[in-house]
Length: 305
Ligand code: XMP
Image 1: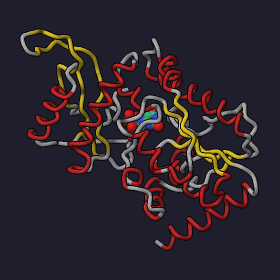
Image 2: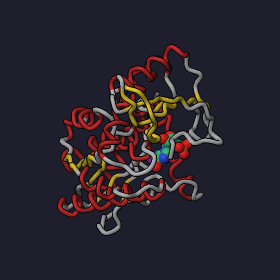
Image 3: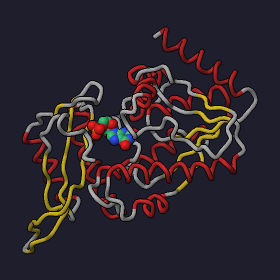
């Protein structure tokens, strides 16, 4: 605990020392890393911190509103860029190309915001494992080096670059961030786009967003999974009323893990699975079928793409 308090004091002092009387920009994502950095930077800089939240249209249900309200004290700028994200995703089916489309669109949008703001520094929520993984070239999917190059920042400030995830969570609790943030499950940077197999459209995102909300509602507080999710994996035949319909197939996944490198599917009670299935098919009429994924990682991954 003493460590955490010391860390906070030192981090705030170090942000002050780096930014001096300049202005700094941070991209809020709702994740624990950027949230912790934003609070630390706000303590150090006050109104000289400019938080920006880009609404990609790919967030979970209620998430954008929650971010607006949790961070309202630092007056974040909200940029609704969902049209740009959906048009960048049009026709893209390859999972890595989707990640690229979302990542590049994010950078373009963020760049144009930053250019208008006249800021000196960029604050980034890079954590220790991000640095290790990107040095090893393991993952293409996180933020290291993924920020605007066109803008000439005086410098990049990475207040939590030496912390592991569980340490970031401890700092988040000490900073009194709400549980939805400090205990938030991992959620991929490209958002719900990687939970739709094949081309991403607004309609499919609506379906998968509702399904994710139901799965989280049924599982998070009761079973505390490492991660649980719903993915839209295709279409299949069903019967609704007297008609055969061609409806969406939703796959439900719930896993236990220590570090996301390996994972085990949870052996959920039938009663819980039955309730999830009947809620999804009744609350989302375009879904005809619900399946539960019982593959560990490896050979599967946690996400479907
Ligand atoms: P996989 O699916 O590879 O995921 O077993 C391991 C962990 O990483 C998350 N994940 C991502 N995170 N951008 C991210 O920021 C991504 O593109 C991405 N893909 C997967 C996944 O949710 C899990 O926690």
